Image (cartoon, rainbow, N blue to C red; front, top):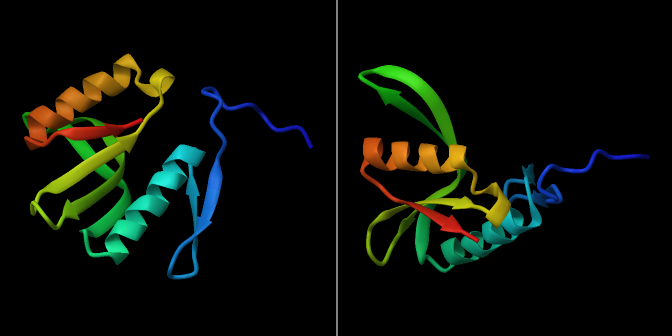
Length: 115
């Protein structure tokens, strides 16, 4: 059966989670990063691992847009919360850059872009 090609050429991928549910990822790269982070969590290097975490971006209490980050977790060595988005070159769009700056200004946290 014919399948529509993705805009950025990524291949959607699924993974079985520990609770038996199936998680869908937008790319093989994102799924591989999830696997890596799960391994780190098992080794207790990180904790509180979450995926597809939404953040509301607002000005003076008025919602402007929403940013969904691929992963958030706590680095157990430093105690810092980490905010990550998996990106390839073409997906680092001007819209993403604006949302990234908006997030960093509002939440006073940096977004780590994993390539």
